[in-house]
Length: 171
Ligand code: GNR
Ligand code: NI
Image (cartoon, rainbow, N blue to C red; front, side, top):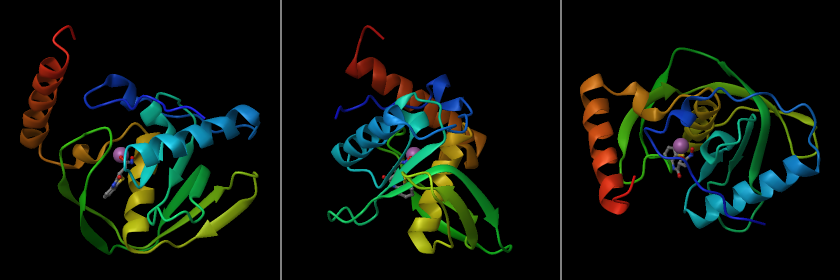
């Protein structure tokens, strides 16, 4: 397995809309393994392929991180079941060092393929529901910071660019 580089805001490649996976072949399985390794190494609870600059509709999630089975979602589809929303403090491996509260639909149904290409359905609750929506947003080129005021977005963009210059003066 290999550790993959995670793209960081405001990298334009995070805005790419990912394409459906046509077939879960050996290359897709290797990517899923590498994404899991990258997510665990970065201490995240989820990762979308977009974040590692692969523009395919693949998500890995592990809220427990206790050695149990991670959740793999290939070609996920989401349906909002009612109008109720719930606020959660979100963070993102592509926006390191920043968290902010986001309101999202509370009750959703998700359909996807697993690693073996079998269809399944779930009605996630709590942080899992939030995390799945956060990851599907990545596949659509959307970041949680897009939900903030344009004032906060501009302030964050400047901070991130300044931080990058300090970490790597040549960039
Ligand atoms: O590790 C992560 N934690 C998190 C916390 C609240 C809401 C969403 C997330 S997802 C994030 C990992 C990540 O950036 N996935 O895209
Ligand atoms: Ni994220």
